[in-house]
Length: 229
Image 1 (cartoon, rainbow, N blue to C red):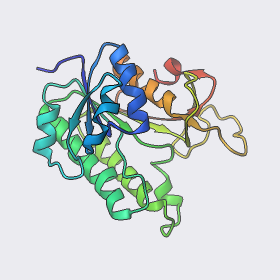
Image 2: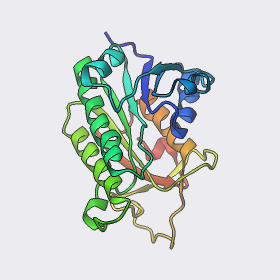
Image 3: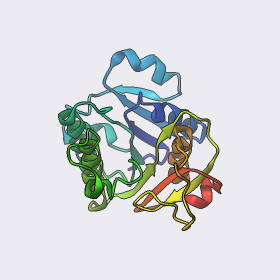
Image 4: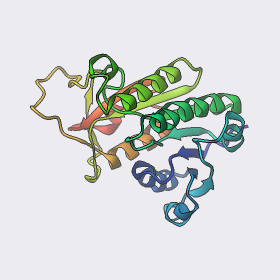
């Protein structure tokens, strides 16, 4: 039986995860944050989360399912960080897919993927020789796999990530990264605060919003609760 207050975060030492964990704890959740480096235990524990040592790049489906057992939700906020196409594929796609399979195996009812805006369309428009293409392909394929599962998922697609404080307000985008409201985009769209992404994670888990939906966004003026309804 699932513990309705337990959430497992993959990529527990990432910037978004470190912002999301204390917000989830404040909202009443128990958080297990998966990390691969034992030196990160104290920093993760300081957020109120329970650090769990497990390298998702190496862990198989059974090992992940064992950690997920009884959880209400899994949040995938891990990433290879770019620079190595093979490792990008190994983490951003292969480990992500194993985590989805493990969530289904463990009977976890909710799954939140932190992706990026344009993950649905970049693979059609980017130069395949671009250094960004392996990441775009990995995220695109992982997101597509998730859409084909029976999981109660939400895919969050923020634009260019920033370290700005949360505004709790978003500008929803379509799958090509254009304003969903049809307005004329500026020459350069604003970025997406990592803390806004963290707040979005909490909101969709707490309210059940955006089930089996992909929500792309940057920082804007639409209250987060309205953008993620």
